[in-house]
Image (tube, rainbow, N blue to C red; front, side):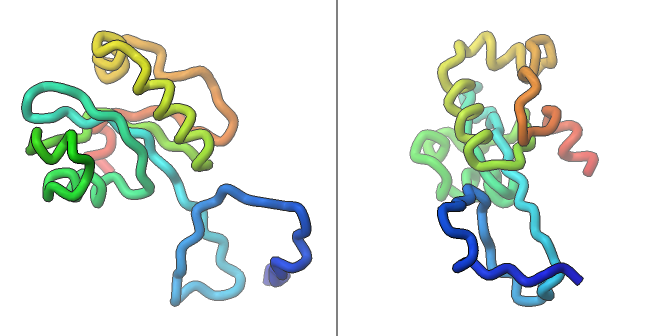
Length: 135
């Protein structure tokens, strides 16, 4: 059994980990929350870049019109690319970087012609929507 964690003992230590309430998890359960940076293809062919902890749910919210205002006017949308990150900071930085790219560079990333990324601490290899559908 893992030792219990007392937040009062962690003076000066801060975490950017996403915390969720898991009512059925015992004291010895460690929950790792993966973040995704994703690209959506909108119905008009444009691309939208975002981040989430749940790809299926986020795609559904975009298609229900409860995602971003940009995608609400361009439905339906489909996730065409995603990358896993183990920290919110890593995902936010990558999202910001990709948002600054040209459409051509984003398309190359989706097609697998662009280098997905340099190796970044707290991140995992990229995958496409085809890989995501297989899981």
